[in-house]
Amino acid sequence: MSARDGDGWVECDCGFKHWGLNGAAGLLLVRDRTVLLQHRAPWVHNGDTWGIPGGARDSHESIFEAALRESHEEIGIEIALVSQRELFSDNHGNWRYDTVIADAHPDLIAHEQNDESQEIQWVKFEDVSQMRLHPSFAKSWPELHSLLNKLFI
Image: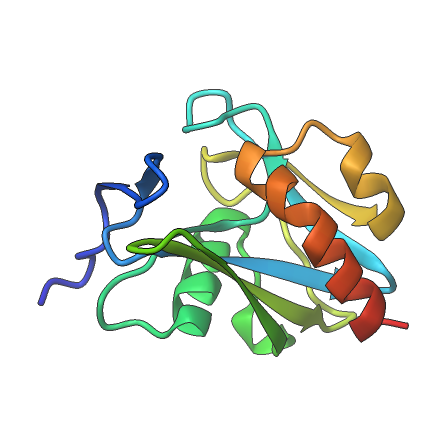
């Protein structure tokens, strides 16, 4: 088993192509009723949109491990300052995207760590839908928003 065996495209049971041979995972960081969003670089798949840091999950990783690794690579967070709270799955049959909803410690700092990100921003829950969102994130946002409102009263 290679260290990065998840890279590659998959056609899901719904007929769409997704990145991640073993599925994918992302991290939705929450602090003070805001979420940390990443403005994706124009050159990446569905670029120039806002979403959460994430990517292909390797076969040896848990969902949380994959979400943390991808977030560290893309937005340079210190993973010790993240506490997992909930898991949300967008299941497409033979492929799924798992969103780890997590608390961000007040000391957590994020920045554009690599060329996949143009900007990082904390956005109020109610303002997220006004942004140009990654298509898959936009589809999941109403359910995520509802879940966040229950978790973070």
